[in-house]
Length: 369
Image (cartoon, rainbow, N blue to C red):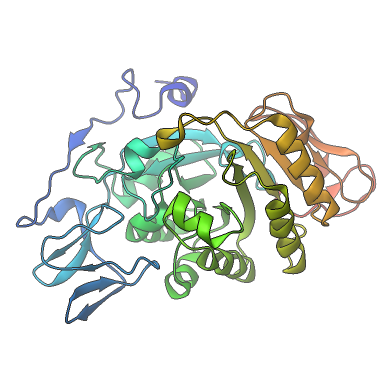
């Protein structure tokens, strides 16, 4: 199978013969030794073993499954059962993550296991995010094999994506260390729902991240996503301070996150907190999962959000999921010339050399070849 076919089918495609999927089974009385690893952040309490990776703080008794669907207690210790058993493996253009200022035109070897520590009503990957590795068709792909496959297909990075990589934290951490040693970059595509200590530890091996800032309202985070806003804002600050290249996505969901005043508050907060040069992607909602009765986001709403972000001082603002929209291009913040032109996920014009605009020599923030 050549690279073009692999890009089309991925390792989950029926035409693919690179890997043979298997079934990962676990129960409260049986530890799945091959596909498990002791959790890195846990503490014993009188009520059970508490996971300390994210604000859900699941406290579990023997055999119980965490909110993220992939952590269990076995003989008094917490284990992840999402380790070396991804249910989705593909080659993706880095622009799909979306990352627009991080080695444009490069390929990312993308993996995901089942599970998520949020429960978004609009999730586009709900069939895996709201499942456990016990329920999905998985692949035998330990960290060393992930790195080997990424190198085999000449990818410049490994992306932890599709579901929520925070929930398969140990798998990301171990793979990330091996990838760094092999000269590969690591990309985190996440909702950012994680505590400070594990995030700082992980950030040592993360080169770029796209964080989904779902809204600027705590009640919406609770009702739409089953989470809280403040941990995500902290994640943005930590990743920036740790030197990780950061981009932000805001999915504009009709009747939920399309309030333009709330969008202005979000953009104002970003500008005032040092994210004015951080690319912001407004993404169009399409009916998914439990919000199938809602309409797609009107393009005019996305264009209004785009205008507001620029008014509030953000320098790189994009519109996603709208083919042919000019707001997918990158403009030089100094002279206004188009320095990267995109058609879907393809780069059709690149006028950045050594990190500067070829028209005026002004620096363009990002990670460039």
